[in-house]
Amino acid sequence: MSDDFNSAEIELLTSKLIDDFISYDERERLVQLLQSDHNSRARYSYLMLQESLLHWEESDGLSLQRPVAQSKRIINFPVVTSLAASIAILVSVWFGFSHLGEHSKKIENSTASSRTPQTESLALDSTVSGQSPINHRKPKSQPVLLAGVLSYDAHDEAMRGIEILETEKSFSEGGLVMIDQEVTSWKRQEHLSVPAEMGVLPLRGDRMIKFSKMEVDVDSLSAEVSETIQVLDLRKLHEAVNKGEATFDAEVHFNQGVGLADDSTEFSLSFHAISGGLGQTKRTIAHRENPLKSDVSPQTWEKLETEFPVPEGTDFVVVALSARKSGSDALVSNLTGYYADHLNLNLSVGGVEKIGPL
Image 1: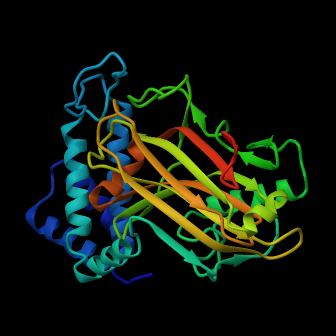
Image 2: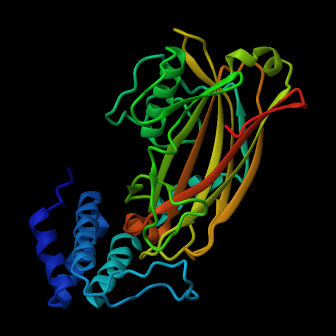
């Protein structure tokens, strides 16, 4: 831990800033601490976010919603109402991160360059053994299963789904095992579904998929969450797969709720082709990710459509959904919700047979 980190001093100066009772010299000291130490920045950001959440919960109903057209499909509810809370968020963003300099720029540029509109990779180095899922967070250096997906929870759920399908379980907590012709799948849509909330109504029916909380990286000003939505067992279709005659087509809609994060969200749907039979090491042999930038209105759902030709040697296919925020919005990303709905997945075999919706 850095010698510059002094939790008590950070808490005192932050409290004075929030109460608008900070002197010029104290303000300069706070800036110095935030510039010099990661732990100081992390503690400061945490305190500011707690302050904003406190004001959210104590709101008496005054609305600061986005200026969107009124609609009967919008559910009105109070958002952060305190000017002090709003200022706290803005000051947190400016103080904590405007001084990171070239280090932050390098991180952001690296992140941006690694995410092209559509990526596909073959024979990747990401491998895991066929062990049971691990619930705790793994070190970032450890190999993972789903290429391009940063969430370890999504990796664990993918491995869990593969294990369920390999052992031919008919029931499993956290998902449903479904059979459609030659394809058996483990689906998590129902497990992740919620009714209308955060100003968002389901696109179809009365429930929609809700993403888990984003994981926020304070240093790089980024936040991300990924969900393994479905794991499909294609081992009974090996002949068609190995002839290159199996192709998925998918459609899904995304939305974000009303909150402090006013910029659009980058959503994506990704396919991951996994090889490795029962008792064998599982390996990603190909993946494809298709991103979509949402608008900021909870009234509208944005549609993403894509295809995925299943490569030779595929035993399982994992379908994942992701949501990402960058910049100052990442710090308040969890003050709203992120949603998906009407995931329509079909598999064409031999250009004639169509299995689905799966």
